[in-house]
Image (tube, rainbow, N blue to C red; front, side, top):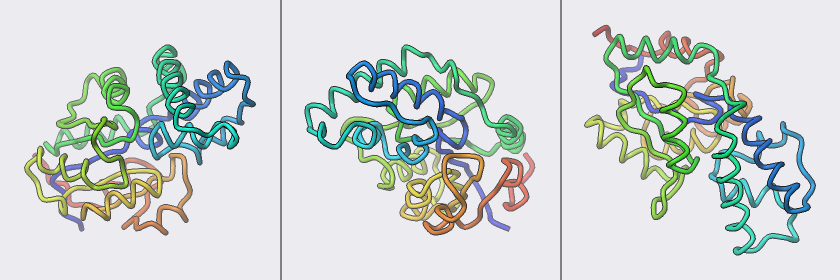
Length: 222
């Protein structure tokens, strides 16, 4: 079994089901600008690489320009804030997994490509009873995933070797981040992408329920 000293989670599609929240927020902005909206399910393939890439994928190609992308990204972030996570839900089994990790004194962290302020706000709202040692979203001047810089920063703050960190995520970007940082890549099937994508980008194992993670790793009792 794998020796684990810490667990790092992605946020959207891993801890929280935010697909509808993102889709409704994005479509509201698109309609405001006179652009056609997308089916909510289409946002499964739009998200994961940060807000800028989301905007580039959701607006018409003929409207792509640096100025327009920045404008729409600002509008989208404000709309997402305004909605205040009305449609967001914690995935089944996540609370139990976090409880088990805390019982065993395993540090937890979050690394997301969602803007940092939104990432912190989501953790504070949905997990007030759980302790996350480090929470990092996308910050100006810091590379986004799959660059491993954020993962290395988390390992450093936790004082553990990256090779002893379980990185749990739902997209190819998450698996690439974990592999680049030398962390243990775990793909989840309840999120936004399929098994084939996760395994094709380096998942060491894939789980269908959060508690399955504990069956695959050596997480010692406190």
